[in-house]
Length: 579
Image 1 (cartoon, one colour):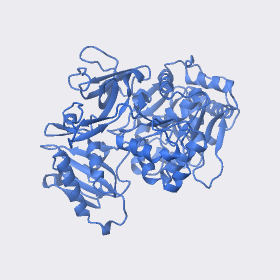
Image 2 (cartoon, rainbow, N blue to C red; image 1 turned 30 degrees about the vertical axis):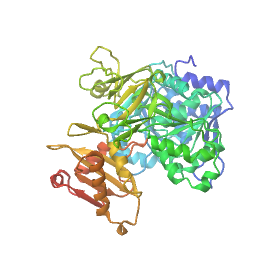
Image 3 (cartoon, rainbow, N blue to C red; image 1 turned 30 degrees about the horizontal axis):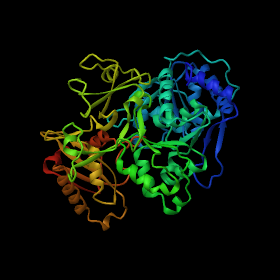
Image 4 (cartoon, one colour; image 1 turned 135 degrees about the vertical axis):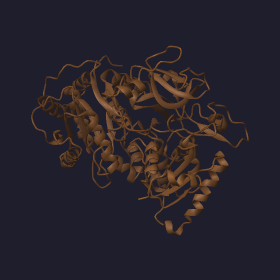
């Protein structure tokens, strides 16, 4: 669709062709705060050039620059300014004071050794103190929204292999790594998104996803700019406070493509009231992408049924699979295509087989698109032997293509483990995703994370299946995390959030007993630990993935404060002291 060599060239072309077209439409954070703000392509370009001039003067070309913004408009300006100046943009969640968030930011700073940090004037003092606390007080902290000047007309030369930005992975299975994304990777993935979404140059695309995450950055900010369209966004906080605001925005502002992780669709089903539903118009929502975490068949069905009255079409929901190491998209397609009910016991043995009628052990799988639609090649590989597996067998998903990154930032060991993998038959240049899945009838199915799988008595239990089963025990159960604890044998532990503040009126011991009984009947396993905890305890990434490695670490270190718990005798000594 484009002959541009870099995203910078593309943006210059967009500004020249339609300078007065709206590039960004920024919705207010609450219903009472008035009209949306907007930036034209001309205004966005002018502000980005002004900041790029400052970065060039500070010698930031080729150097990492942190972006920590609450303002969506200023994030967009700062990101483009880095591209214009040839600096390496490093999107980081804005500092919110939470300790585990500070640890993540500090880890990114240690890995990147940034030339500067761009933030908003309101956050600059906090960001400066954070950098100083972790030994990086010499890093200049610049209030990007206060930079003056006329800007630069002359931009440094860049080529397709120039690093555009670092996308730090979600860290759902460990410490985050900085994925090196070049202009070539970015433009190739935009082409793949265009094939999936089919949007035109006047399209309005957007949602509430944070821009520091790949799905929000690549899909909801950069893709509409790549098209020459309009990015329409509201804040994540606005969505969490009242999920109906997302759906209202889709109808009110003509958003034709929007997406979010599975949990967001589930949240809308549970929290959008009948009164709010009556005021929605979703007839113009052409594609609703579900990605970023396992796509659940029950969520798709519940969401489609709930919002059909608002004009939502049954074929609107699309399932997608991607990861930061592939810039964003690997595959995608209509969520209803290829939905299957498979035998759970066969799944545990590494095989996808249709469940027989009347069989209780059944698992629903949703296809995340045909492999032919993916942004490159997809293989299913045995992670131990590196042998390519036939259709219907579960293995690690390996991918290649122009949108796939080649390395992590200055981390040779991690890069060697993930990138440039070679199969047993000599096929090379592949990325090991760490995800498990299968290809069947040309469609890709994702079944779980390799590091998350719980191995019990020769069976592979998928933690998301355990978590979903537990959540059916009580309507008071929210997010949960299931993981294994090593020892002479694998032991299963469940940490389950309780959606109530009236815990004293509940029989928590009975709830724990119900969880143990349910898992024993469903999976034939004796659960060694069940911890009921307050809402917000279970760690999740910015895309909604449960951070099971972090939860295991918290459990073993005694960092959890349960409302009530059951621990088997052989597990009591495995966890650190409760604080």
